[in-house]
Amino acid sequence: MPELPEVEITARRLSAALEGATVASALAPGLNTLKTFDPPLHALEGATITGVRRIGKHLVVDLDAPAAGGPVALLLHLMSAGRLQLFEKRASMKDRANRLLLRIADEDGRPPDRELRLKEFGTKQAAWAKLLRADELAADPALATLGPEAWPDPPADLRDVLGPQKARPLQAVLRDQRVLAGIGRSWVDEILWEARLSPFARAGGLSDEDAAALRAAMVDRLGAALAHYEDVVRLPIPDKLPLPLLVHRHHGVPCPRCGTTIEAVHYEEQVLCYCPRCQTDGKVLKDRRLSRLLK
Image (tube, rainbow, N blue to C red; front, side, top):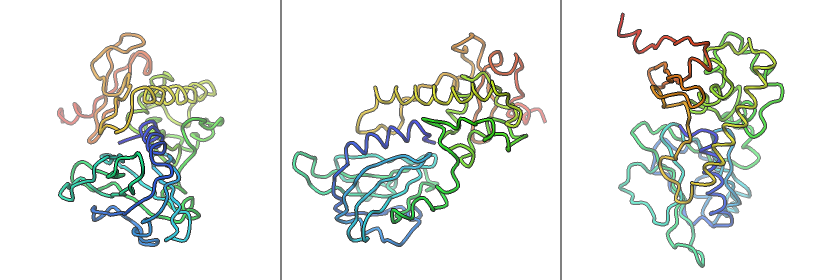
């Protein structure tokens, strides 16, 4: 799933390319993609894109839409397999990956067939979009329930923010968007490794030093990822970004800090990676995949 750094660089690149552009037409080939009906999608015809931004893991395309009575916001969640990309050629309607298409009007000096396209790989059709009036955006349940942003300025009182979660492990709490917005499976491993904290340490048991290390790790690892993307990501945005991961997906290779072999705990739909020496006092955690085989 695209997380905070990946969604942020997508917003930056698309905003720079589309600010001031006019929407010629809007289509929603994905049957389950558009979750709203008022204003209607066709109200985007003739709308001017004023920017693209990120809120948590969500993308927001801001538009001035006279047909809708004024400013509107197209709120999108990419889920695990969605991508929002700008193409210089319009999509074939036979492409089953298309979920939402904003066709950009011809402009001097611009490719004539530009199209902002929400695509989704696979068959789940979980990515979604909502077209909302701008003054309705903050109250939408998808955003109103979000916790504070994990970057660029995580809460200074992080220990107090996490404390009410008490017995929940850090790797679960940090991925809970109601607690902190933006972190997912990939970057939680990176942040906890940077902070030298066990993924199964309890959120309610952090010391002041632990909380300070965790906050610093969020700023450092997420900021470093964005700096990397600023250097290497250009339009068209690739389907798979070059994630600068040090621990996640590196099961079985040496820890880049101490050389100890990176270990993993496998779940049904995810894998958690950590360094035993740096994070768990040398203890190798039980891998649930192996536990199931031994039953």
